Image (cartoon, rainbow, N blue to C red; front, side, top):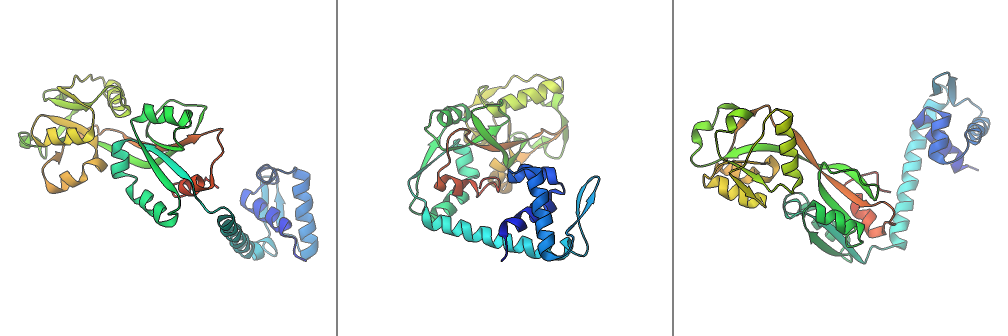
Length: 298
């Protein structure tokens, strides 16, 4: 009779290349891992590994021969288990998603719509707010998952997954600044023009100010705005030069109502991360949503 656990141990050792690492992943002792490998080798009548100083290597006459088939079989069984779990625990209830208006508008619509198509019984509640509000909502059990502009300070209460989406900040201009199109400008030269920036209490503004300071520059904006939408409208009307993620301005850039400035050095990329409360158990419906963004959620 096939002992599935022995093959799981074999596969884990092959992936890890080490008895110690395999034992840690399987939550069993290293001697137990070694014994399982010896038992399987005895059943199959062939050595499965070459035991080297640097670890475990698949043997040509045994391990390499069966590895691919074992991998396929274990993945097939894992898929069966997942489908049975879905039948036992049909997702329902309420899923509370927190994010800023812009993240909801530009980064999440397709994912949320796809989730609703797959799991229509789950009621979706959208909680709109800037990063500080979403952080507070996560900690006070008013939100199940939050999407946050990074970087933020480390927080032991949250389990953070970075780079759900990448944001590339750029300088944009519109009517009245056509002479800047095609030119290469330095950060210092931009100080000669009116600058539009987000409010100081935003992650995007903090990131811009930190970069400017690292380049030995300090900017005093002509206008501070509280949303990317207002910034695009004001730039389009010629009020000044704005700083915005390219991903949030693509439509207007394509239409030609605004244009991107060539500034050196370019602004560093930022990212949007995903966070859940660290100590709170994850519902089945939440785990299904998280898996749309990260394979790390089981």
